[in-house]
Length: 526
Image (cartoon, rainbow, N blue to C red; front, side, top):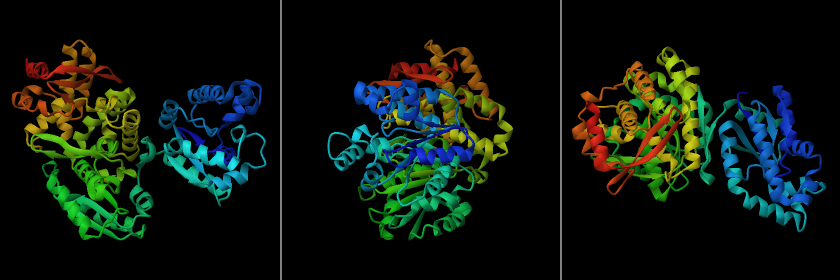
């Protein structure tokens, strides 16, 4: 496996037993972190606790887990129950490895640990009460993972089988506390993975559009049949111009007509418009119901599928009304991309290039060298660029779930891009085409501000052009678009937080007066 497998969870849940079995089966190294700490420190865990206390032990534990992550990937690691208490380290683990939490009930944990004398955290009181207290305190820690697997009532072999399947799928975790979810990328996911996302709901409401319904409606019906959940469907008119409050009303009415209650689940099957509108409808129907996404376009996979930003447009203001509402899960089935119209597919590559600039220089290399494979819809190539894009966005979102800080990096190219898109009535330019022009604008503005090196401007502009994306700002109605810059959601009063690139893989925010930004944009044609 390309990424290591970290088994987390409370003591007594079977991490070491299952981990050894998995490592032996895969023919890879197994590391028991507690045993590794004992080897390095040359004393038992209990002795370390007695000498330096829990805080001292956690510092050692963080150090040793960091060393494990620094080393070669592809191993199986059984973690101590508190190894991921530090959120910074937890986010690193979620990004660089696959974290599966093993679970058992408090009573079962007590039964399994009652004969052990190597559990210092259970000293000093009623073990049952301490187990309950620690589980409650670590609830969010154990929620932020790629998957959770109960070990109660299962053999170690059965648990290992289940964990092995998760490891092989290599999902991407979007860390959001109780709302953490996994994005799965690959082929054949609709049939295999959609039923588990829907099962358990009282009923399902599928939101799609006319184009997607004609292409994939039958496949969706077959997939949902396996979930055995009553299902209704609402089919929207396609296109960004229909990403409006009227579409919300259509979804809400369909949900009411189908008898959807607060335990219902919305399923978004479509591109970015469907994903954004369905997610916002889920966030607001009966004050919030769960939802899942199965994006059918490259843009939706690499952008709208991650982060829980849902919205509709108002005239002249893209995504002006919305909410943060995380899905239960996302399925990026690259097989579905074969039916995407060529213009939409090609334009989405601008978001991939944007993502590479923000946090993955190697991704830009892969796009540049893999243009033929991408154009031919090679499944392995598409899975790679989608997964890499999702990982970058998940990394940023995990640190800043509500765009209070660095999440604004993801708006690179969008300030000018959104203005051009809105100026054209959301029909003249595809979103990715607008982002391509916005990226060129952002890079050139960064160059004029003395932040962005000329070589980066030329490299990215060349990549976008080679992908067939628009890069000539001189042909765009910049004067008309500038009038819409004030609608940017990053505006605060008369100033705008503008994203610039310092180097490939490193961006930052600069605050500019709105009139200065307007002048810089208008000067791009000179």
